[in-house]
Image (tube, helix red, strand yellow):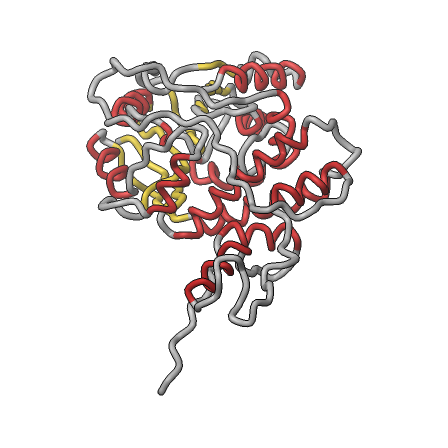
Amino acid sequence: MSAEPQAEATITFRDRFAAWWEGTEPVPSADARAGAEAANGKGANGKGENGTDETAGAKPSLRARFRAWWDGTDVGAPPAEPDLPVPRTRVAKEEPVDLDVPERPKEVWTPARIKVAERIWGAGYVSPGGTEHIMRLIKPVGLNPKMSFADLNAGAGGAGRAVSEAYGMWVTAMEPNEVLAAHGMEESTMAGMAKKVPIIAYDPESVELRPNGFDCVFVKEMFYTVVNKRHLFGTVAKSLKKNGHLLFTDYVLARTDHMEEPTQNWAAHEPIRPEMWSIKQTRDYLEKQGLEIRIEDDMTDEMCQLILAGWGEALQNFRPGHFEPELGEALLAEAELWARRLGVLQSGDVRVYRVHALKR
């Protein structure tokens, strides 16, 4: 009589992230092992049929190990791994067809979080991809000093200042978060670029851009957070001059029929709940606005590498005693945020696309 197949413990993304953190091979968590053992006839107390305790010596949680590393203390194994903290979310809303929408909740950016983000991604940047990455993205546009350029997700202003310095351009840099906009403006002022690259706050849900005002509009990973996408795409299209360029990167759904449960969980834990379209929905709507798609490139693998490279370098720089103690919690929260993002990208349910469109 053949033996029954044994249930295997699943290696989750959290396990893979913990292994990446520690430089080890990924193994299932204690909870996953316990579940598999229960399915294979072992008790819920972690003891096998012979009564031996097979969960003794379980590792402390990633959060506990991180805090101990940061504080320079020893860490003991807690009874159970705590859940990840839940950042601010918003209730999902249906996409409206007019501008009468509630004010968009703002992502929380504290001085500590901004400092941590710039340590990870580089001065002037609060997300993956520094100056070299930005220059590669905009290369197909063929910018020159006579062109007008707008950045609609300016963050701390790093991309806008890099473009201005590289091409001698005046940049209209707009940022949805008031705290980040103020910080970015301060950095532009300190760099002597307050007039060439001012950072202003705005609401992407209701903004009206100047018609025929720009030769190029650049947007880095923002459309997916906007509820009133039809309005924003429409005003961006109108703002472009003839033969003007729209260049953006964004998170999109791989499928339109449904969202897998892990992806729904990721969306619920984002600082602002994503309102994603598929790349087909995006393409179809842009074409209705009179834009011709020139480049449509799945850059998910590149984004994953940017995330891992940023954190790999950051963890060499963040050492206990070298930074203020209060940065530890901000660093942990940012690590958890990007661990979840990396996980959903690697799941295949969400992709990152680069799109370059031309107005005819």
